[in-house]
Image (cartoon, rainbow over all chains, first blue to last red; front, side):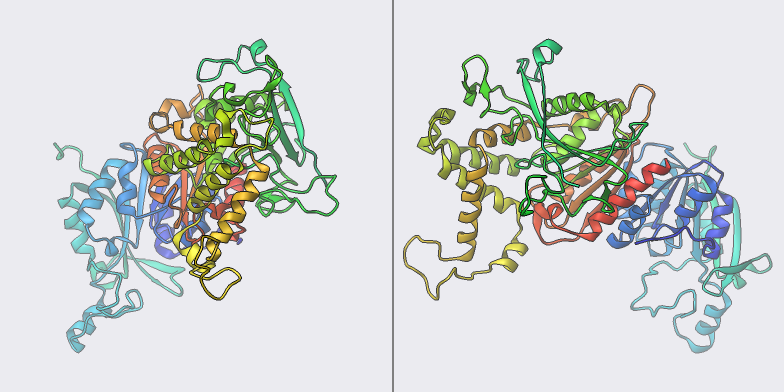
Length: 212
Length: 375
């Protein structure tokens, strides 16, 4: 199985990658087949670790030379020393986590910074469906029905901002994006982002003074 | 390219090398085989550690085996272009101390008496096995290993290497193994030992002038063999099928295929292995306990703080060293900041799965070893 380092990443990952400092120690939660880690290793010389639940995907990562652990991310994050990672990445995974508050508190312990990306549930396409058809939104970013979706958490950009504060984080940077075309292409949304963006990407870190 | 079993003998008392028990065993002979070529900078060596009843014949064929009847025990993994590519790596495999496949063990001649050691052979540990292998590496001029790889008791040796000589180890692949035996694993080993010692022909280990405890040894192997399989594998392979008959015999012949299979495995093993070696090696595996060492950061790095890279592999149906034990190892390695990858492989063949050809294992090992090259 030959998996090449992708030259082009999914658009939210492009934003995430641009925020990673060269040489940093990175943990990618739900790393899939390791596209982001492989790209960062090649282009930013990072020391990367991934966690992936799916056995075949985890094996594919290891087979391409990445450091990856097969397991449940909520358990795997518990074992690392305090402040072990410069950055922990949670890309398009938060909406599938059962206890997001608990997870983010764990991440505050092991990572100096956390990058979170997630599909924005308040994008106008979803709002229109709910408003006019009265059905749970089914969009290209969120193509599931209510009964078979892995996305058990409904998050909007506005919700995430208040959630981050509540679990003890300060937002360092945020970027609302609208991606299309196999998600490889996209653009940054600056006006009315909560309505127009399909994804949100946030760089957060533990609030210093506020924590006891 | 055909290979040859080689022997290295050294004088341990001259080197002042003690066993963990404090005793000195000397001289020591270690049988080993090598495949591939050591490169100019001597940094492409891969040490493979065999499991409890294995030997140094890890892959390829012996030059004096024209009928090609005896390929190595990991032939699908080790060779030109294979998972452990002998075009790139210089592979070494040593028969463990205490065994009977060419290295010094209880069936070797005790120079003090001129007779086989028997129970006069000192108790050896997994650490003692490593120390003996280190002498072979020194003899070959190797001070650094690109990787040390092994399954089961071989995996214990891998971990022991990382704890004792972290400065020599660039990477390590412990497969289907544990930091220490569970009560279940000790229990099976104890039953195997008792089966041997209950055979009157065992004669307190002094049997080398006679036929020896073949029946006890066969029963020991039957027990061991069951622990290497799994419920699923045995159901698939045998179920309740009868052996060469339509109905029960209503006596104690082997009615079921599984009975016949175990009897065959038992007697085959008794023909090739030494009963006392089973006692010594199973005891070494039972004594093995690295949990405390793996849980401390200092024991897994060299003086400059360099660490090894780990790939831990377990199998879903392994009930001898189940995945939870591999995860305990991974957890300990993570806590101490090691670079560790882990993958559980879905397979129904039990503990012995790592000895069965599987492209997933090959890809994992190949990719991991490639990744070391980058580092």
